[in-house]
Length: 281
Image (cartoon, rainbow, N blue to C red; front, side, top):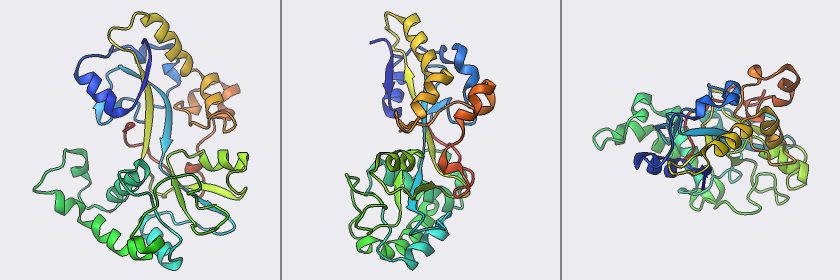
């Protein structure tokens, strides 16, 4: 195996065991197009040190329907008010589901009065104080959720805010292009749209890496470089193909490709600015 697509936890394990080739990613010719505002040099809170080349990105994103929710909630406080105004129409996947866990992480980032502590390993002596605002928020939110928060729906086919049954007004995804993609395929109503919190939402990047014992290192680098090319990135981001957001900075692209790169729907008018803040877990 000469080129691997791995998640953050596996990257950390392999890197700590010195099983990955390092120092190559930023020497790729197409690295010059990479958006350095994304967390492309960190994965699972571990510095990549050139051992991974970014392939795609993601963003915690809400989905709603314009016919039901023309003005979406764009902060934790607004989400709480929305849930109370529409009891039983909001829920989230039960952790350890990845998206449900990410929502709790996002709420903690927004609510804690000790944000610097979140960049450090959890400490038994400070954990309760750092996380207390999150638990207070959830205690207020859960009574207004679907089934009063007693059972959070697991992610499964049909769990969308935009289902024909109309039970839920909001849903979560980690792909800001998901609503556009599913609306185009007919799986979601055409008035479905994406949004995020105005102050930003969690984002991540997924990567490819080269094992230390790869036999065709040069070939693996060629493939990784192709995956970073504007042509491959724009094709991959096409909702009709995959709908996986690009890791490239549109401002760095050649003029003819800049328009096609665009921006993610979650960073549009409804969402405000979205920030990428962690590697793929």
